[in-house]
Image 1: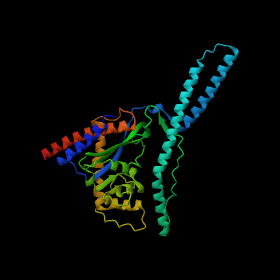
Image 2: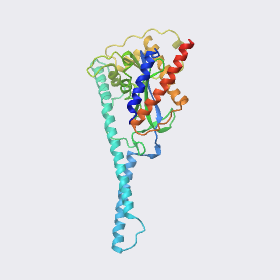
Image 3: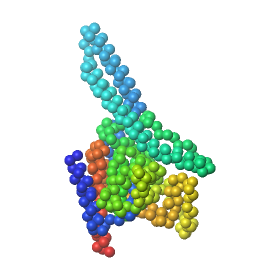
Image 4: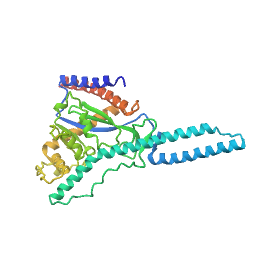
Length: 354
């Protein structure tokens, strides 16, 4: 897309200006995602299983049409059907359905490969517990499968988009997963678009999308339980060579009630540090129970969640106009630039009023 470089340059330029005006604060960055409808109907999709059933049905119909053509030729009867056209139409449909199944199969293999690191990390953690004389809790982790889910979908209008759960109910939309990294002043410092319906594999890519203008100043990344996995945290906190990046992740690993008891409101003693045999999940849970952890994690709801609310409710952006992951990503980048300009104007007004 010709304007892609310009959009990316604009995103960087706006952040550079915000930095020069002392409007950014990126010690702690919050990461989250939101579903944005694709420019495609979910009714223009087919599942892996249904595609296979339709291929079998269409191939039978092609055979039936060819038999009718042979009979008409032998009997010199006038066939009311345009048999060649009907055969071609079905063959094109079969080819499209076969392509859909191939894409779904490739996606399943890609997902299995991405999940392999998390599976291996879980296995290694359980083995470490056994060697320490502890019995691992919970069921044994299941290795990722490259076999497609029969319900896995392919959309003919925008093949890159996916069926995704929208909101807290049982509502599903053809959508993309728009990701954002937001600083403490509610400026978007990193953005990208994913076709993945959940956030499990999105922590590292979203952190990697943080602009180099502010990336060196990031010391903490805050996110919810949907992003957490041992492999994802490790990918953010260490390089491939195992060198610490200087960033520490604070990710929720336990569900917490919104209701606060009287005891919860009272000062709590600092929790004991986990032992060397503790799992990565236990270490993360402890990190969030410390005073610094609790103080930092409070920022997440105050920063990234309002940003998505403003983009959807105030700016009215709920649906992509462009199709394809690359173009949708550039459109999301433009939306983030627009949001940042509005936010900078608000921050300047607040500074002037103060």
